[in-house]
Image (cartoon, rainbow over all chains, first blue to last red; front, side):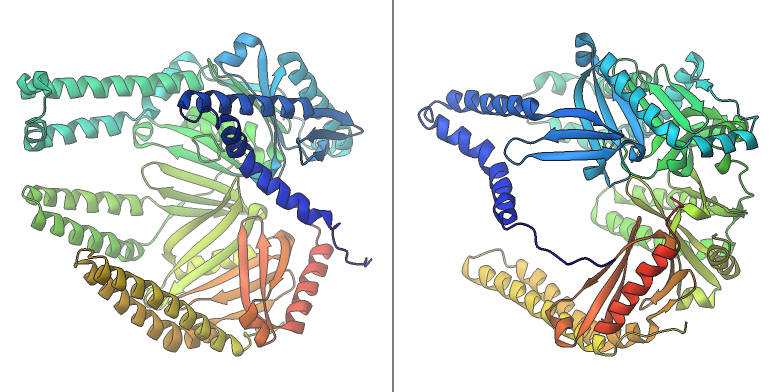
Length: 478
Length: 160
């Protein structure tokens, strides 16, 4: 089926040019033109720009309309360059409903759809809706989606009758407190306090002398340190409370192929994700969490996920889980990622090989510091600590292979266990340099499709393992 | 299918590209030096200009005389039953497997240098980034593109 190749209509040239120009001219041009008379007093300018923005927002609101047209969601928008978007409802991957304090007072929510496209194109945001209306749209979307996949769903039910739908995980109050205690930046704060304390007598008096802040000058050094400590404590408390507010009332309900995640105290969000969209499960253990045997579970999903999330595009599945409960949790939440494989450590010679760079880098840079700075010699104390940490970090890495499942353990500050499956890996590469060949080492890299494309590497593994992984990916893919 | 190498013309193209980049860098360094001399910029900037010039000469040696040959020798691609294998690299040799079921689109591209030699670069995009075969003869590139797109059709991308 070959069709003639065609040009767009000639007007495309103008419409593209106009839309680009429009975007540039409107905010600047109108503001300038209307405020020429008031240019001498800046207030005129200040007043006119919000007015222009308001007028355009009003026009945009007037133009923005949505409706359901037989199985498609239709959005009309645009003032000068008008656009119509039809989205097949089956293609909608997730629905998110969000509110914050201000919107809540008005009884209004924000609704967001994700499709599998990259984040910039794939998102539709209906920025303010009545809650009822949002619920109605959500229901319509999930209603529209089910009849088409009826047969598949029935098959699944026949096979796994033990998979009872509607399982709900809640974050209890105690857990919430523990989660926010363990996840707020307590460690960093403690380190910062020690760091400041150790350097206070070096630079604080100097830098403050000569300023007119006389009350600080008269305060004693101890007083200063106490002040700093209080400041840090307040900062820590603030981060603790922000975590509490973000993760409060966390509830994950699992239907047979959907996750509903509700969270937040003031800014609540309701998110629905289809589990077949999950490309990898990521289990994160901060060192503090590791001490108490807890972990956090994230999911990497294909398509667009909120970019404003702090979790780097991953979906937070559950904030705090005992490691002993993890297998059970995965079994219920997403069976195809459960049953984690045995994780093998990487060979010692690989770790030694990897240590070359940090040893070189840190010894050179710290020696330079020690040479040029008057108090630099104390920095050298940090060298063995730094290298020991690097060693431990590299040693704790590993990988596991079990059937179609690949598990990669990595550590930067937090230990991250990534579980993915062969059919989610987009491409696979192995790398080897001459030196690596001599030591019989290799590096493997795999890429999965997440919010942004994501590669993860297993560095310096035994060459036979690298060979095995390579053949595993070629062989058992289908 | 057997391993296939690039068209040898690519070495010349790599060299020409390197020389172009080299000339552009000389322009920048020249501009920096003149502004130091004429606008009375501090003289230690000359040190920076000197470093840049040395690096620039090093770049010329590496990218014109050494790297193209090595890269040409290491590079090959192989179209197999269900996937594409690409080997690339200068110091670190990378072998990449891209299953056809994960390919989202195949794109051919031809700049002025490539056009002079009747070559085309082909890039294969998956959901997680693109891989490039830098130079193929035009009909080879078309054949590869068509082959990949028919193979994609045969294995519909049902695994998301």
